[in-house]
Length: 147
Image (tube, rainbow, N blue to C red; front, side, top):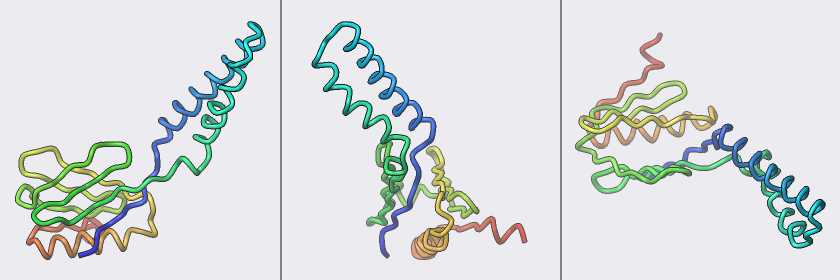
């Protein structure tokens, strides 16, 4: 079974906070360098300003969630969080929805994977359908239940 890479987006609130914060610091440094006549501040604010502006472009907005079907567990790596290993024995069921994949676990907190790219939906559904069939895990497709 092939590994799966889900295209995800960087949360807009983080982009605004990081980008806006860096631009604000760069502006403060510009004001300080002009009012206090400190020359080295002018050179150090250019990378900050550039990085702050870069956060508002699509270049800083796309990451990948990686899912590996290892021997006995699923390994999930998010772009901005720690990786987790989900044992096959602790998976109660997998639910496929229009925008989400839910992995319900028996004891621990459930896992929710967001599908941002609708073009990738068939690939993601195929991966989880094959995985559930191979490991004898109940699979629920909410899209089919609605009809």
